[in-house]
Amino acid sequence: MERSSEVILRNQSKLPPGGILLLNPPRDNLYSRLTAAGHPVKCFTQHHGDFRWLEASGADVQFGVVPAAEQISAVTILHLPREKDLLAMLSHALASAMPAQSCLWLVGDNKAGIKSAPRHLEPFYGQVVKLDSARHCGLYEARQPRPGKPWVLSDYLSRWAAHYAGKDVKVLSLPGVFAHGRLDPGSRLLLKVLEGLEPSGKILDFACGSGVLACALLAADSHAELTLLDVSSLALESSRQTLILNQQQAMLLPSDGLSEVDARFDWIISNPPFHRGIHNDLDIAADFFTRAGTFLTGKGRIVIVCNRHLPYKKWLQDHFKQVEELAVDEQFRVIMAASAQNR
Picture (spheres, rainbow, N blue to C red):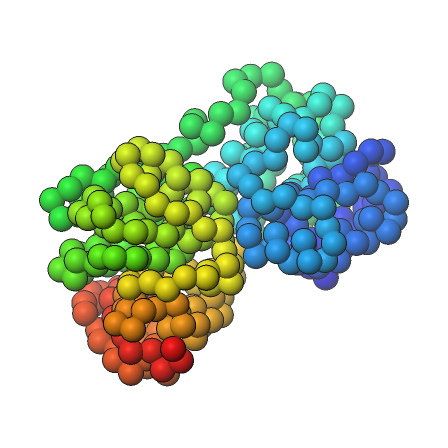
């Protein structure tokens, strides 16, 4: 069990009567332990892999951007997100939706920054108190939602631009999305390479984030068939908003890795993630490379950008017969692979 969940359980006696909403809970038995203790519990998560895991565990769970007002319970237990701007957005959304007598519990690891979290709660709640400190974690309670401007999604969208094949691409992103509010240097290098490759046909943007890669390709070739995949509801909503802004159409697919994919593609492009929360997680990329070949057409290719220190070229060589480094700079490399061994 996660240490943060242990802190919740040791403070069960302080829970107010009524229902509990677990917001972005970890994959452990916190839900079942609270349910067994007689609490009515629902879950809401922004991570599709966690959604599937909780669903399979029998939890009452929904996947989305933020909980609707009717989903807010007597107490909402939020597990601290990595990004402080995401914490502010969620704090505002919950304060706008929760009944006056409800409260928010915020729990997180010291290494994740829980000690500084109250300053992100105080703009939205009149009372913020520390309930516990244990297991290298902290637990805070926020009450008395402050009156103020209601939460609106568009207030948290950051707008920026990218350039590709002589086209201007407008981009929108939400807090919690990779490289929120900017074009990261890895994706910039990847776009430069893709401009020369001119991908067409059916294309999968794996870990799409804000949708900048897919929308750039659509700007150059409106006939391309793009599927934008991400595990994050925040990324998928950002991509949806970016598509609308550019008057483009594509399929949005929530998926943990390639688990929800059932089609083949001529191209798979990606700036694959290697973090989950505050921890490095290379298993995401390793599983992606292992399975990607089964989702490519006969002449299909995969093109990725990655940090230079990551062993992705070697990993791709384990699964593809043709692997070529197309570009490299001080920080990143772009690699193309074809002729999958496991098709």
